[in-house]
Image (cartoon, rainbow, N blue to C red; front, top):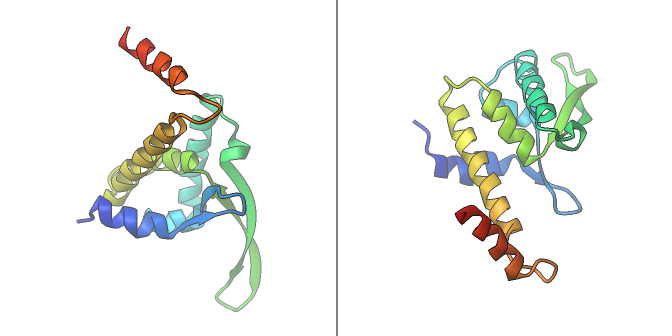
Length: 145
């Protein structure tokens, strides 16, 4: 049995990357292993379904699922470039939502990315010099009506 805190602090965080601008991303092939998919073809189906969800939400898939080429060493020592994706947190969230729900680790991933997504939303709502407290209060007043 997995524990979400263990996964949060180890597995999902350990495969997270941060680019030169401070943006988080995950590689699809690394996420595939964590979510216990053995074949890229099967995981690619999950990615494609997540892309459809993204499109249906009117969100640009190119910003969430960035195609990259990575070298892969085959069994005979030959190196070939394979397709991978740099995934945003939102893309990972959609992938876990479209993954096999019978896998416990998928349920943990769903929880992890949902919590992380919500934390980011809350951080974005904090007051900044460009967004005063009054604007945030106005938004919360609308929720109460």
